[in-house]
Image 1 (cartoon, rainbow, N blue to C red):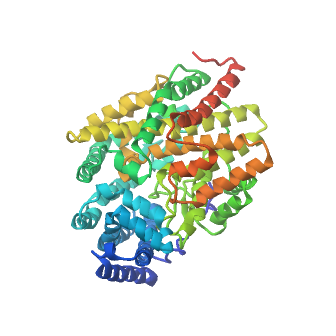
Image 2: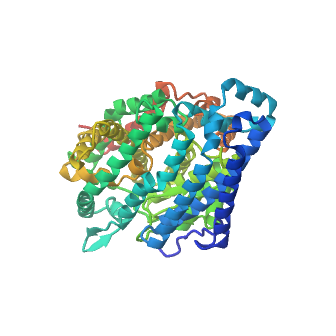
Image 3: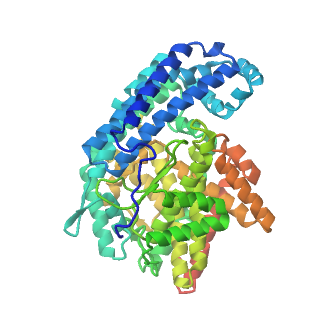
Length: 601
């Protein structure tokens, strides 16, 4: 892609790592935290409702200052993970955050410790405190799992030299990896692009190169994963969480049995989804089975057009605007105000994300844009996140953050809008078929593959409780769970064994991955509600309710957020609704292929 791809400017956070404003905010946050702690530690149970509201407001202001500083450092680090000075600054900000947060640990602990009767009394007395009720509900949900003030403080202060340090080691190691292909060394982003190259020889060489380098690093990756899992196990034991996934579920504001229903339903449907699709794809490509490095290979008739940045922008904004003009306007700010970093370059974090930063600023999007149709879809996904984060920002720093169960709603919905736009405007039926296959693969990667990852994590964390796992033991779990997820039409041989080593969510946020499946199935259900709206008034009502859901941020649980649409994630039929939509798309593709004499074995 040309050099005209945008680089973000972090000036809306701070103008440089040495900006005087950064040091000013650091000192102010420390001073404000010390004063709040000196005045209120051990006394919140005596405070009136209005006084508690004042404490929470002060706590939010300090937290937002910390969030601004760490967001700046983390974004700078993501842009260049190989610069020691940038890494040093990011680590310093994490240590500052831990030091100051440790002084404020009493706030959430003491708020959670107030008895239910007393809390109801002060809610009744204070309108201002009632405004914080959604956040307080989440804080107080952790009451059975909280430790003493002293222990919570110790854990916070040790975090930069504990789990955070292992995450940093993982990130810097991953960013520094180079993969030999075609006589040159390439980055992870480049090697992943090569694995979707039209040339099967390039895909094979890229896949085997990736496997070889990951295999060389498997001992380090196993050590990191073992350490992360062991620390989590100890933490879970002290906090009385019954299962490794339970703490993540509580943080996501979702019940264990809801997540179990999702994982069980998707796992049961794997033969109907991934197994069937990859069997179709293998036949389409003229083989009985696909090697694992061809899982995401372009299908015959694949749309090989290169989408310029301006063309991608036009497609996305038009698709968003047809759904709601206000949604397109917010998305346009990311392009107009330099909130996106798009080019591929050595040392930059791979993949893509939308970082919410803080409500007093705005989100930033990181991309590794190469101009393929999947990059357009990825950009739509991240812009969906960005729009969501902007719309939720007025809820304030403590209540704008959406639980992972709802965090993928706008991103996946944005992808769906753009996919529909692309397929509706595609005149070539072969191209339309390829677009349909591409969307099916995206959804399989988001739903089935992520539940395959979730099943891997579940088994790994369960077995880690019994002792450290060797790289081969981890690889055994990986191979068994992924064979179940991918099915017999994908050949996974010994070269697939080390691929678990650089999946960042396993290290960054254990049990994050099921949120992707949750979000995709949720959006599939929402999409069917939207598509079933038969009148303009009904569509307008859906759009209004959908935007309200986004504006709610973290104030509503999944059940309350979905109730206006007549949906209930506690019912297994909810998950089947989303999976039936995906199965229907595979049916459509199978029918299209049958017209060309390509059938199912």
